[in-house]
Amino acid sequence: MSTPTTRTSAANEFDAAGHARCRLLLVEDHLPTRDMLVRLLTSEYDVAVAQCYDSGLAAAEAKPPQIVVTDVGLPGGRDGITLMRELKRRHDIPGIAVTGYVFDDTRLLKDAGFVAWLRKPIKFDDLLKAIHGACGVASV
Image (cartoon, rainbow, N blue to C red; front, side, top):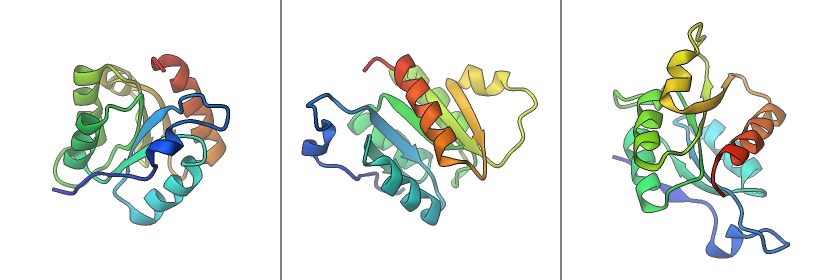
């Protein structure tokens, strides 16, 4: 099991105006993708990072996020949909799915707790729009 990491300090949990920044859990097993997203997201969000179901669950238990961004295909036998179902059950938080899979039946994603889903390769602007929309769903 991997250990979750947080890429921000307590001082970074607030923006320049002193407003609390949205806590985001990013679950991505592909290291280059994960590192790039962390670099891009930490300027605006308090980002915790995990690479699989177990580390994602541990990170959420240590500090529940307000939004989850997870890859659907995760290593270790349990996928991002299973992770989101569990996080929704435990914390009732919205999620954004990032996937290379095609989902004709989006009911599966909605029922798991995803409020948005993006197909890889994703455009960062589309991810930001989805996160901003999910921030409106999350109780900040």
